[in-house]
Image (cartoon, rainbow, N blue to C red; front, side, top):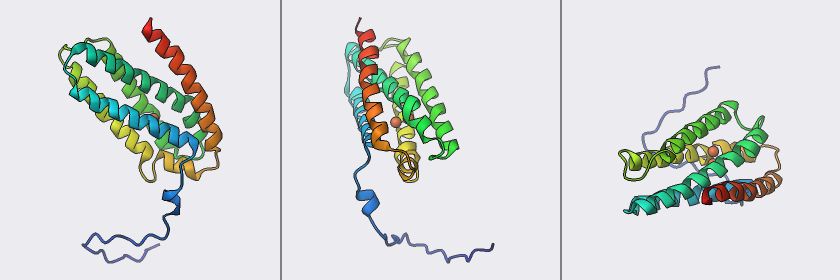
Length: 178
Ligand SMILES: [Fe+2]
Ligand SMILES: [Fe+2]
């Protein structure tokens, strides 16, 4: 019971790593696909900060909103349910709740126009919120790390997500354009 307490050393000495094979390995398709989406949306939030004109802000926000809607939907339809039993339940539940929070904020922003009070602030807060969520997914021991350790075929899941993403981009992107 009483585990031997290790004398804590003040210095942040790096623990010798046994192996870096795992970290050096290429991610399975499902994870590569989602990480790529994360990088794209992060870049769009950065780009938003540089914009001045309201019409440019609106156009870019529409792109951000579409990317986030499609991304969260493929995670919720495919990865999250497939991860039950592989990833801690609490982590999965929290991920759904964070998606809901993001969707509400997106809807609030969509009901507004750039230039209105708090528009930019809401976009900024959405970006920070997404950054937090992405960290929960990608950090060591996080959602993706746990999923990778599981038995699910993340290549096959990746193929399904890829196909669904194309379908949704066409459907939801098309709606926006008309
Ligand atoms: Fe997510
Ligand atoms: Fe994600």
